[in-house]
Image (cartoon, rainbow, N blue to C red; front, side, top):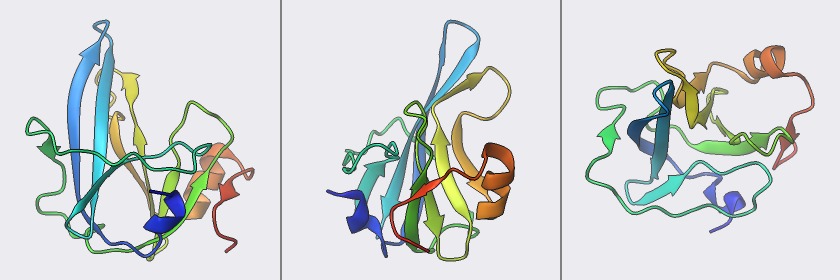
Length: 135
């Protein structure tokens, strides 16, 4: 499936498998459920395709009671040229989500990361962000 095929799909859930590496890194393997039936990995910006996932029973449901993101449609895909980072899904309300797969232990950054607006990311990472669709 191509990333562009995700535009207009509705976020219905998030799952993650958490772990640890080398005793000082937290890890997270996150999945997004779309339209209650499609489970995908967060794509890298340099990729055109999305990895379709199979549900892993050991995955934790991250947003059992959250209505902040659930039910919102994907309106765009954005990324920076850094090949080590996952891209961002822009949601219809202007917020963005991405995945951090590894972070120093105890920081709480490994997993799904939520940004209230594009400006929040631009202030943090710079203006050289790429967009799948011109907005």
